[in-house]
Amino acid sequence: MSETALRHSPLHAAHAALGATFAPFGGWEMPIQYADGGVVAEHTAVREAVGVFDVSHLGKALVSGRGAAEFVNACLTNDLRRITPGQAQYTLCCTESGGVVDDLIAYLVGEDEVFLVPNAANTAEVCRRLAAAAPPGVAVTDLHTDHGVLAVQGPRSAEVLTALGLPADLDYMAFTDAEWSGRPVRVCRTGYTGEHGYELLPRWDDTPALWTALLAAAEDRGGRACGLGARDTLRTEMGYPLHGQDLSPEISPVQAGAGWAVGWKKPAFWGRDALVAERAEGPARRLRGLRALERGVPRPGMPVLDAGGRRIGVTTSGTFSPTLRTGVALALVDTSAGVEPGAEALLDVRGRRLRCEVVKPPFVQAHVR
Image 1 (cartoon, rainbow, N blue to C red):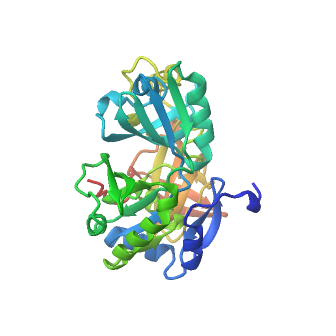
Image 2: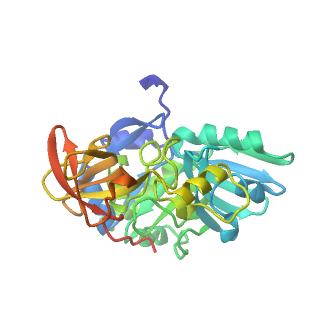
Image 3: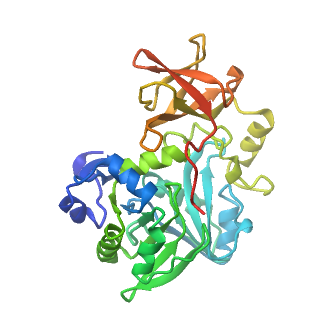
């Protein structure tokens, strides 16, 4: 996609004023980091205080009409019957062969209404698939630019919301509809960092005013604006997958260790037969965590080798962990290699072999609850 075709969030001017470095992401031009600190400072703010992210590029879609929740449950992998209205759920949209079209959050509003937040680049395809399968009376509406999305993440995130008079006393993966300055905003106890946090969904045109207020309250508490660079290092430390790298139409939830997001007892969902068969047989490869034992930074696409130098996999995500001060990676490793947590593997880092310990993510302790 050409630069001129990239879409912008409602906060693009605000990011530019903060000296943001921009880059294309999912068809949008989004801030990667800001001039007053960079990725490490932003990452550390989230782990120690609070960070505010603009993630308005994320998709939004509404499935509504009689039996909408039942319909969604017959399409997406997780079981909506595990939750009640006012709760959200991580789930997957799969192909019939078991690959992942997208991973997304489903907000159960009621039996006749489900609000979805897919990834930016996949929103249109998720909506297309749902609309094509929808029974009479169920509508699928793409609301991509009807709402902004602001993430407030970190141990002091509740203080930020309270300072604005927004509800903060929510259970993990719960949501409520509130008002701020007389305008509607959905407040969700969700996030992608591994810290206590919230995601707020204001109306698109209301997003700049709410961003300004949240950022001011965060800065009063040692926080700052954070870009997608810190979002990536934070989620990698937690072992959270990024669609297009750790999940994809070629990487199933069984391979990616996301079987917990599959309602295996449900009679129907897209890709069920293929996934049940793969689970029973055992996947040919599994997603593993790698923690560098030497100096070196893993990146996606690096070969994973066994002790004898035989290629046994490839990294899907990799970065320097600001928390651990070492390199960490997620990698798809052949199950036939017998590489289990506690073992060592080698990464081919541009011709140099980097010793790594195989671990089970997360790499750092989660504080989401």
